[in-house]
Image (spheres, helix red, strand yellow):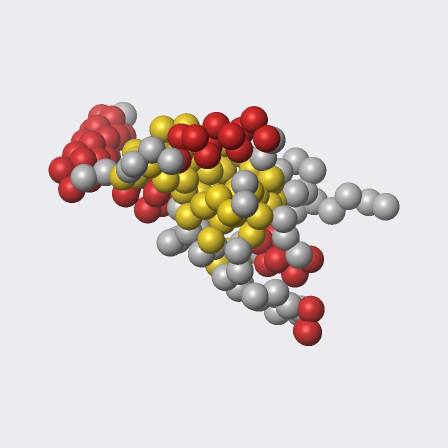
Length: 156
């Protein structure tokens, strides 16, 4: 049985997460998916916008993650915004649960990708919400970086 290789790598990012939150610590988690969901992810038909993670009965679940229905899925197709279970070790789950109970902290997905073995992985981060003045500082820092990059590219 030949291993299927993707012609392009799947790398779906949640760009709002780094703007709205200060990302403190990250983990890579596996996701429990159905057959049509992984096919849609391989076609890059997923979105992490407005998604978040929560604990239900000691298990970590991602809510609000949109995976488009697979075009050739027929009656086996999945629901686009269903809750999906994340796979982490018990030690990591205990640490995340303890840290996320503090006020102002949440767990947000930041990146969805296909690993070396062809399995979908989700990078999640423990995050603290930013205030409005923190967001303005982030915008200013990004603009400064762009200006520096332009100055170096013009001078060469």
